[in-house]
Image (cartoon, rainbow, N blue to C red):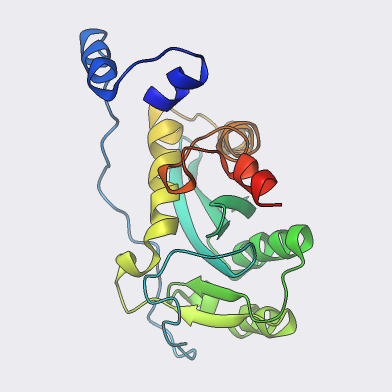
Length: 219
């Protein structure tokens, strides 16, 4: 909030902003109870953890992280598969479905590949979910030349950067209203990602720049 105000040429400090927020009843949206979506009870091969909780990257398309999260609508659950570039924290691929199947993860991956055309050797990090360990998904990774990395069993800290994105979109969008239809939620997510998160939302890890601004400077 402070950085947004400074961009508008309002020179204020964190303490003053905090005081004004409390005075006007503006509070942080707290994290809710976690719903487990990872199905690691399968017989597919498991890759080693190449990322090893190092969420820094010197350049684009060096390290990608992926995961699947969820939201509730009055029509039922809706699942969001996402691909994040760790250099710019930009969401480079995503897909939505009412079913949490491997096709959902594959769709998000192929959209990211179409956008970025990553070089061979880019690290692809995921959890041990059956969607990412499936033969079909792993075949796509081999085809595109990725180095495969996976989190430890049940350890979400191994994919903390992706978890942070999901907490952010839930706090800033999903938990703020009741979603009557899946279509309504899907359109809102599209607007949030393409209209706010990638082009405008500032990140402390990027020197308080948005993902697209950071990429433009890096280029």
